[in-house]
Length: 280
Image (cartoon, rainbow, N blue to C red; front, top):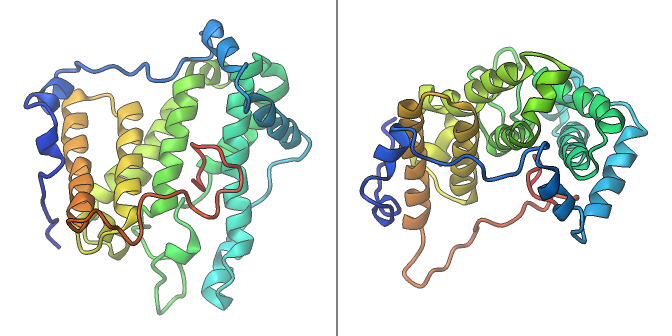
C-alpha cells in the first residue's frame, strides 16, 4: 500500500529544517537530567510533585505485576481486554512516577530498584501492542507478526525515551549497556516496524488509509522515540520527515471550519493525569 503524501505542515517549517537535522544541528536538552539538581529542586516546588512522589511511594510497596500470555489471549477468546490493559498501563504509569520521584527527591536507593523491575518487565513484554489492536491469525488464533505499532506501542517508545533522557546516565550506573537495550527495543518495535511494514492493517494511521487522533499521536510518539534513540543524524532526518507527514495528513482531515470529530485529546484510560505514560 502506497503511503499518502502531504506537505501541509512541512510548509510551515524553515526550508533548511531537515537539512540541519541531517547535519546534527539540533538540541536535545529539552528535559533536565538527574544530575541537574538545581533544575529538579526547582521542579520539586511544583504543586503536583507531592502527588507524584506519593504515587511512587505506593509503587515501592508492591512488586511489579506479572503479565502472562494467557491474559493477552483472553481478548481473542472472550473479548476481555480489561485484565491485560490494567496491568499493562499500570506498569507504565508506575515506571513514569518512579522515574520522576528519583529526579525530584534524588533518592536513587529508595526508588531505583523498583524502577528497574518495571523497566525490565516492559522490555521483556513480547509486544507493546494491546490485544484489542492485534492482528490475530484466524487459523492458529495467535498474534500475527509483524505486531502493529499501535497507539500504545508508540506511546511506550516515547515513555522510554523520556525515562532515558532524564535518567540514562543513572541507569547505566545500575546496569551498563541497558540504555542500548532500551534504544534497540524502542526503535525496532516502534519506529522501524512502521517504516518496514507500511502495509500492516493497523498502520492505517501512518499510510493514510485512515485518519483520526491516532495519526497525530502515533506520529508524534514515533518522532519522540527517534529523536532520543536514533544516533545517525541523516537517518533521523529521514525518519522525522516520514512521520512529519502524519501531522500533515491529520491537518488535511480537518474541515475548513476546524471541526474534528476525534481530536488529539487525552485518553479516557489515563487515570494518573500525568503526561508521558503509556495510557496518555
